[in-house]
Length: 146
Image (tube, rainbow, N blue to C red; front, side, top):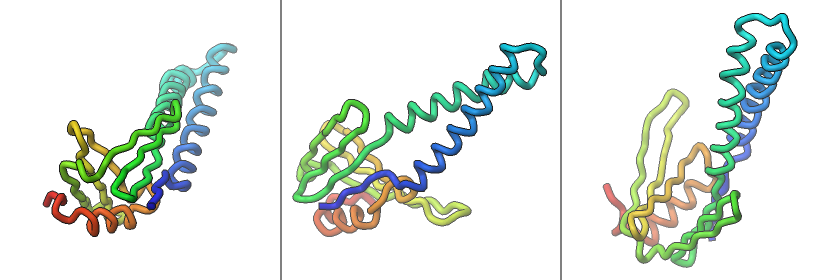
C-alpha cells in the first residue's frame, strides 16, 4: 500500500505566503479605517486580503491523500472527510506528463477512472510520486497512454 500525501515544504511555502499576505492586507485595512492613510494602503487591503483568503480555500479544497494498492485507489479529502474508492481494474488509462522547468523536471500522473473521472498527482506537491508511478508501471503497463 502506497500512501501519497501533500509535501510539508509545499504546505509551509503556501502558509508563509498566506501569513505575509494576510498581515499586509490587515495592516492596510487598519490604516484605511484609521485616517490619515496613503493610496497604497487601500490597494494593499483590496488585493492582499482576497488573495490570501482564496489561497487558504484552494489549499483546503485541494488537500488530498492518495492510497494506492491491492488494485484499489482511495482518495481522501480534508474537507468533509470524504473518502472515494476506485477500482484500478476499471481504470480507462493513465499517463505521465513531463515538463522541463528552470528548477528541474515537473512530472504529473493522470489517471482516468470510471465515468471519465480524472485524478492527478505530481512530483512537486505530493510525496511518494515515484512509488505510485512504479506501482502503476508494474501492475497496469497496458493501460499506460503514450
